[in-house]
Length: 515
Ligand code: NDP
View 1 (cartoon, protein in one colour):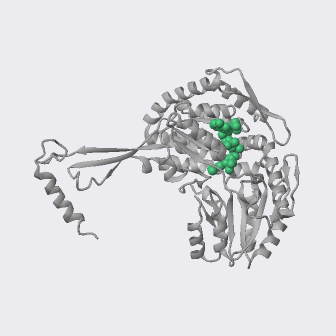
View 2 (tube, rainbow, N blue to C red):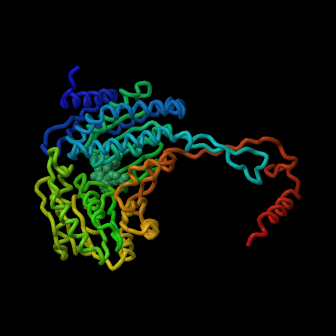
């Protein structure tokens, strides 16, 4: 059989999305375009509030059946889904390349990570969330105590465009594994990828097709999802939009998960492997055109290693070339407006005394690999999320000063420590004010499904991935069951007057001796 061309694949995706949403008729449409060429990638419906509400209602019905499947039933279907994704990985990677702009190889890496998380979530949900007995304690010794984590119903997921597969799947996979249905609103810049994922789900899991649906549109569609009565809203995006999402969700007391931006730092200590640190810094800062929430945006290198580190980084950065071809190191900025942010940060840094050692040019959507030194800590390039292929490097007295500067930022998503001493590195990592830190590598924590992912401060709250990520999409349910009656029931108006005196004496003996 002839392989489908990309254009045909996209037609299929667009048609299947339209099929999903035909039931929620909406006249308005929008186009997503290839950031490198401007070519139209797909045409998608703009779901208004009524269409979003209908989709959520449909998902609500599907959620009951999905929950009833139990952990084993869901695990089997999540396995089928990941099998489907793995078999069509190149097809999806082509689509990611065309709609987001990143190189095909980077798209493959992203999809691989998402599949691994799907596998972990599906196979660990029972152990992490399933019913268990817990000790009932002294006061309820005649009862058994039971704990389990129940699904929330429908989870709304709003995702960004920079990792259009991996990032939303961090919520979608864990929410589905926990027994919820999901309604996903992809970024208006990557709706085709979102639609492809939903179409893949319908094809791989036909008997629970409505358990994962997609609505498309702009911010107003996302806002409608916040108000649609979902059990939880998992948001990944910028802090300003996160605030709007929280405000909308507050109207209905809908709980939220906030995965927001970062300004992650790398600390390079005196005894670090400087060449390895430089290599990782360049990858961490510039892969995906720097559009990585956990990308390295600033480096603090100690006096002992600063000169060597800067020399290594500049040499490596000079070798990189952005483009849309197979050999390009990274692609164009996915959003034209992001190039303007990068330009503003560059101008601000140089106006304040920063020196551009490599790059510093913005040509349309292509930003050259850029290395900046001597930028003041107060400049936008050091304080604010740049989200471009740029890196600032500052010289510090020692690792303590590096940590102090790292922790002074309002964001706290992730970071990296390069050090030759295991104990020293662990100590710095623990004290770094962030949700995740990798030692002697960058971004590694994101590829460990058992580790939770999320930030502090301006980087948000709540966790995806790992046990915490499964529990994030559940409510803890506590149950006690009386095994036998005691002669005296303390929680009865019929209790004798001396009963609480006797209780006070027992508690005095058990606890009163502790000082
Ligand atoms: P935005 O905040 O602009 O948008 C995120 C999502 O929210 C998009 O789907 C967007 O839709 C939607 N949206 C916009 N307005 C509203 C609204 N009023 N109500 C509800 N939803 C709305 O972020 P970006 O897409 O630009 O993503 C980049 C940001 O995401 C960066 O700050 C990055 O650091 C962060 N990020 C964080 C990650 C993490 O895990 N912590 C991972 C990846 C990215 P539309 O696009 O259609 O406007």
